[in-house]
Image (cartoon, rainbow, N blue to C red; front, side, top):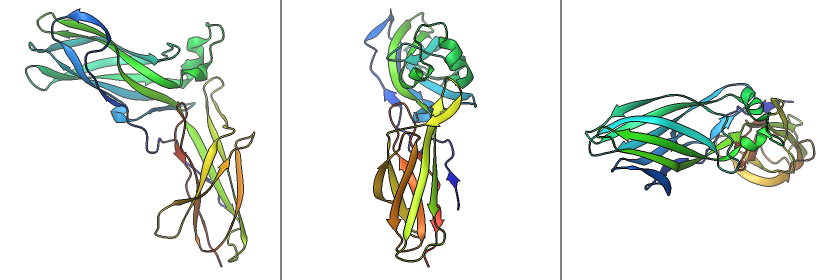
Amino acid sequence: MHRRIAALAAVGAVAATVVVAPAAHAEGRGDIRVTKTVINDGGNVIVGVKDVKRFPITLTIKDNSGVKKVSSLSAFNRTNGDGPVDNLGTTCKKVSTTTSVCTATMQIDPAWIDFYGSGNKGWDANAVAGDWTVDATVHANDGDYWISDDIASFRVKRAATLTTDASPEPVRKGGTLSVTGKLSRANWTDLKYHAFTKQVVKLQYKKPGGGYSTVKTVTTDSKGHLRTTVKATASGSWRWAFLGTNTTMKVVSTGDAVTVK
């Protein structure tokens, strides 16, 4: 039996690049504005249970006198206002007399998420996942400034793992092939991976040299397990594919190759 485990990488992450007009909730003086915001190079921010996640937030800023600095930049969950993230510093690069691109390095430590909210009654560390927003205050050389709330949105998601095991190997042609697996996701309260239950997952198959196509869908059980059977007609690879949710990353397991004899 060959057990395959997918890496904790976001596959096909939803873009988080936002081009914005002046924010609805803003105040300041003069013509300085943030005209574009890119979070994590356009991808979701995926956080597991061990590794510290660093990601950039890049602002394109314009003013007729030139850009002086970004005095503050913060990010937090849009629904509950929680933001267990550190800003490690911002650097700016002048690209013209009126425009600069400034990049802040942000950091989320999964070991700190639960501690961050432990003093708040009813606080759930995992509720940090979901839609986040960005605030920034920027300054121009001529004294103009702009305090902007909600200049961009992005998603912080819980990392996930997905396994695939197809057996027996090899299998006779026309025989029954059993394909199992398990879907788990990061829990930021105890820093372990827990079963992700009642989730629809796609079973996919490909012939050697071909591409994957979906054969059927299966729902994870109360322990996150997946199990189904298929008729073995030709050699090829089998895998499970989970499309993700607003709070949990998309993940695809590595294929398990099966020879049909």
